[in-house]
Image (cartoon, rainbow, N blue to C red; front, side, top):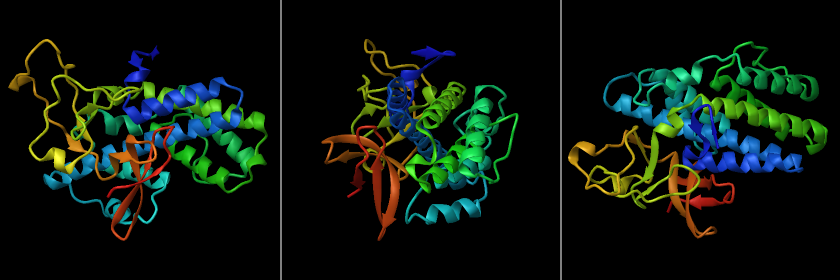
Length: 304
């Protein structure tokens, strides 16, 4: 499916899969499943944006382009249990620190206000929070809404809902708010052209993780020496798709911008018996523990 010039199945694998799951769930009659899938898509976006923002931030920090952000540094050391709100903090602080980062347009897009479908979805979700869930927090009425504000409001909504009984909202209202969330997330994604342009690649498995399935590009994408031993996910800048009929040339080689490890990784899941994109869930005794992002894999995955 293609809308607004962006092909929906060309997003990074975890986002493309989450979007497909939400679209299919919301076509059915199970409003609770639609609601959960829409929020899962919001979480997948938060994990991806947070990991890219931190990768961009550390690249600028290590090359002496910026000064360290104390708030971000403290949060990245507090990993006992990582919730979606913490990922959104990483996205906001990391992107604010790197307005001219290598992912072109990302920082500006995240904070740029919009008056269209995104703002309408924000207003509808907030109205339900105020009228039905007793919300009186810091996210007030707005005529213009940025991707950052919408994702942060959805996090507040998810936190609020998790503290209330399942029947706190009528099932009809749950279905309506789920559809509204999905409309807002579609609008957000359609405005984020970089999601499809910057490619996710796993050097260890030599697979391109774009779209609904992992694929093997021929020739394989070039990786720096030692990258296969130290990184499971690399982010590549835009470039031409590999030509199967031509030999690779040095001029055609693209170097990755940075790894997304250790926040976002590509690990083998024993329960699924396959590799999955997984997000950092918690760190216990210096051991990172991840959770699969695929709609068919919510399993806990140990890095070791």
